[in-house]
Image (cartoon, rainbow, N blue to C red; front, side):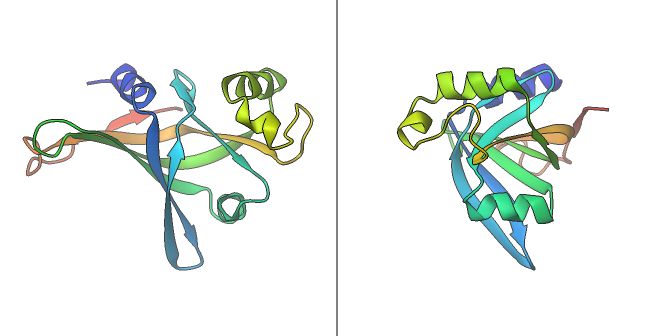
Amino acid sequence: MDFNDCTKFANETPVCYLATVEGDQPRVRALGFWFADESGFYFQTGAMKDMYGQLRTNPKVEVCFWQPGEAAGAMMRVAGKIEFVDEPELKKKVLEDRPFLKDLGMTFDSPELIIFRISKGEAYFWTMTTNLEPKKFIKFGD
């Protein structure tokens, strides 16, 4: 398996679970996953959300992508440090891909519109078949 397998799996998984830390308390929430490509895994949130403050304080995250299937299905976990992205083309893309954001009052120049990605880290796949095997990490990024 390689990084292309990771982006394919993520793009085929509409909901993921992202873990942050608030103080010494882990916080996990389900997110509608945006997209992944050769430059990383992309997410969008709002500046008014607790998650945004948690990410600013501690940019280390772990994301779990799960696809149902036989036995317990398949899972990919991705760990790394997020980076905030302020690129005009991505802001246009997120507003096109997620029209509900406009209904929430978000515009191209809204400071509340936050995009972040994991561009460097490690991922691994899990299935019940590989449950007891050592993890085979796929490193990505610089």
